[in-house]
Length: 102
Image 1 (cartoon, rainbow, N blue to C red):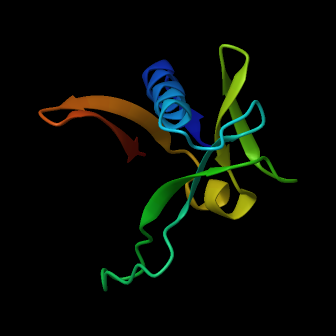
Image 2: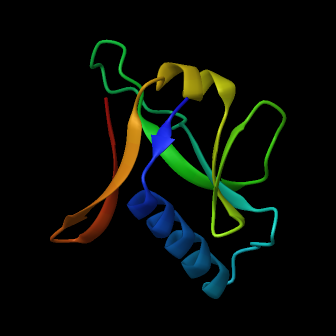
């Protein structure tokens, strides 16, 4: 299971709100899915690039809620790969960014 800090949950909630404001089809069941990025081949010896996309919960997902709303979905395979990791938000010169650490 992946741990998610309050700061990361706040950022995910902000991302969902921005998507809604920009006209994306975001309803109460829509959340952000953390999943392997398709078409990513970085040649780094087995490392997997991860991406974020809007999606709906599916059976077996790890569902992270914040303030009564689903903010993050992680399928069981990705959750297993990230077992013991923490998703956090850090401030950078470009703004807040999500990071994963063990």
